[in-house]
Image (cartoon, rainbow, N blue to C red):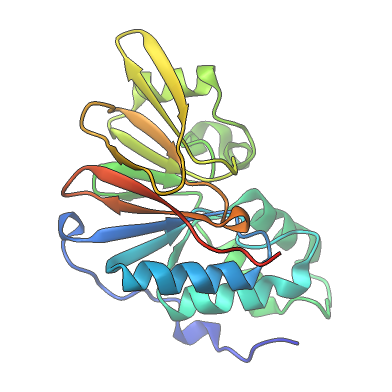
Length: 228
């Protein structure tokens, strides 16, 4: 069953305060499951997040029938969405076809999602930030040692937030050494001595989301209840 939503009326995001004054909510990789999206929006809103980002793979390319239910709460609450590889594949599989499982407006919305955005001193993307060099491949390539080194060597932004990998993680450099460290649920990390850094949000399908405090230069990893 589809929700009745006029996407044209709710895709314009409201203007927010100065980014430095906001708590920022981050989520990623809901993979066609609307329930954790709703739970995350409710939680992050209650925590006082003035802006919320979804870092891609809102949908699951194998379950196009849930795409509209996933997009509806995100658009209705002004969540800024970045395109993931599943979102792109879903459009590629259904665009131009008379599909009973996904509406044309849903495909148009997914098609128009950006691969990369910036917020203050941070880049937000689904996997890699090298969208000009790699194009769509940037959504599927992993953040390994070589990719992390390339980011640290070339970036003018000290923070990269990403999804794609489903386990929360922080990567940072001290001198010539690059460190990879998993982030536990409930953990708060001060970023001041770990920049530049790459932060993987973790998957909503596993209950993970994050709160970023730009003014305090801190992140908090959240674990929400996940339905079995």
